[in-house]
Image (tube, rainbow, N blue to C red; front, side):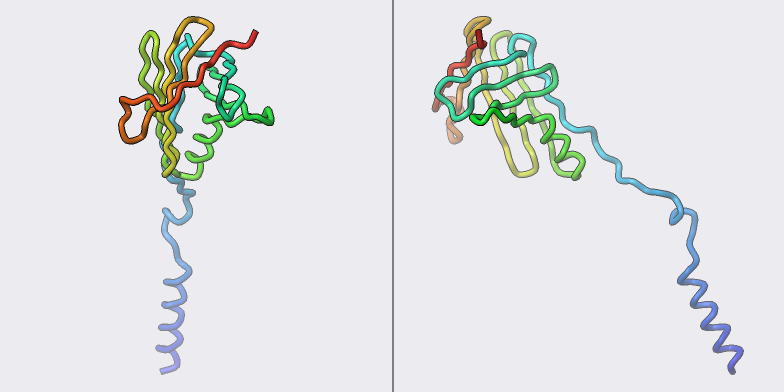
Length: 147
């Protein structure tokens, strides 16, 4: 009886410590590439904003940064990468025409929208639309290239 009990205990112990090939391999979750920002060439550069709670907006070929009152920057490319690395939703939807650039950035549950309208090469309107009726412009901030 002792031999059967010891054999049974040994068999159970082997089951708990044995593993198969997949346990030894390092597995990683497939990550979709982070969303990308691609502003049109006509808006790339630094813009000073009049009348808003921020000093300006800087566009590069793959980023959009708000220049805060304390001269700090809030850059969306960095935020998108952080959300992507944390496996959180990060989506960028852009619509571009010769004189308009609309961008919607979705970071998990936060959604921000920007609507820019080119006036000329030195001036752009940043149109804030009404959330309930997007055909109504609620506020307009003038953006100009710093001299």
